View: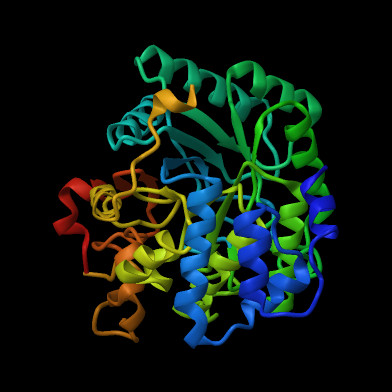
Length: 345
Length: 67
């Protein structure tokens, strides 16, 4: 039975949503549906400790104690033709970010820096609608050079929308996971992006899944979506059944339409993390961009104890993160082992 | 000298955002010497920036790149 079918059969009797989640998600591993996720998102602050504890128990039961650590790098920065309103790399907005290409030696160094943190995952990202021949060639040469450097870190890519031929090419290069975020709920997407559709993104994800690559698909919280749309987004991601969901919190980027948006409040961010965990008990849930501003150090720890089981360390694509060692120390203090590369091969 | 985050002189305009938490997560975007937009590459453990007139700087010599 698929996870979606299991959710359809799930308990719809009235009752306290945390009691329902404890029985359904923690005991049986069946994620909450959209209506229940909305109930979670509407829980008052005084129930947060109980919620986070349950989300952590769910993560420990269905995912285990290990944390997957990942580093990312931008291979091609800026100048993107798309108009994703949150993105400083769109060429359509007066952002201070200029176009840049990372050369192969730089990519090899970035992979080496990532592996040195103990990370098992390295994601190569490009700000494009979809890859052209030049970009695919750069990715191929880059992966070859990383391997020739003696680095066996797992390689993921995020290169926008793909054709079937490009999916096949990435599989042949040894790319084991592909990131393509749906970004937000389907109902909210047209107000975030107008140059392509949510359905076009879904189609790439379908091809990636069918080709046997791991699907990495998440989004950004805090782009003006309603709490109902956050629940909708969680349900849509759960339907996709991705291997990994990266959770970003909006960093209002200068020059973009969202530059004056408020940061997500810390409690709302944590509530969303826990809600996503209860919607997707077996999925890798990764802290990604924006956590430093939205949650700070203490909030990050609460998130790790509230459903998160993966983390991007070091810097992001155009923003700086906190030093990787700070996150690694946090994991040590929380007694959370880093998923070893040997476990993933 | 110019603010590396917004490109304005330090005594001009509001730099609250540049100097706050936001500034801490933004690499330099403008050359401190001429305020030109720089080509910036962020990597997992640092950043490098190039001004067409004043050359390269990086997180390894960051002291000279702050406002």
